[in-house]
Image: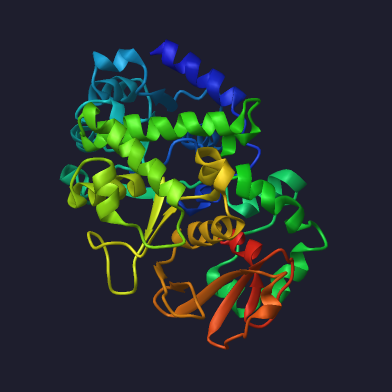
Length: 397
């Protein structure tokens, strides 16, 4: 046990978290069982260590961070380890990559039943369905999602500011007031394209090639998160990767040709749709449907989950308009429902009522503004009435 505490102390002491994630204040930390899901690379490990650093003295043995990558846990279950930790005064156990432990959900349930004064905070893949696929956790686990950096978080890091997030309602009601609070302190346009290219995943701060690191992360998402958690045989990995690449290469300007995709990877249409759903669960894709339709029907659009993926997987063909629409959908996706819209005036419908169109402010003089459409414009820092700068939606979290 002492070896685990030494590792814990070292990691907490050396954790680098220059941006405090807003999720830290959204979680109800009084709950006994807390699950934090998120795609690879968004900072789940850092998040756990930051929580420990903020709430416990580094020498306090009431809190302990452990990682299921440790081979020790191939010989001992979570419940047995937690019991030993609890017996020695432990009260908060932080478990990273919990899905690496066989029977992890039943082990967590055992901890919950046996140790009423023990709090467990665990991280897992975005592919995991904590309650749907693990009924033993129903009613006892509170699940949260940690996302990549928002543009707000990226801008704060780059400029040293501490801009707060704004709700969708705040932005829609009075965008000019918010813009006037931000522009004297920072120039969003100066940093926006950098964020679009490499700002979503916190590891852009590391001294490594970002695109190569992101490609490695994307491979891990498919090879480990999808295959391991969804229990898909290894022989199908090349089909999933080829499908993902073809979707990225085709872009999101038109509806996907599911029949052609099925033919290209030599499988059925139903299997293609299941693979697309798995890639969306892994936060590699976003699937958009018209209002009133949903999976497993054919999507109206398939987009990469965030614009950084576009530059990593197929950089020679990144269309700026597609990158900006990808940013828009990714921003809205956190707390709002986004559907495709086939009308001539709008591209998207948010929460089944608000029509949006994403467009370049430099060419927006060529269109006829519609009063029932909200125009999210890039290449500008200002807006008024039903026209808002696109970057402002990056302040939603």
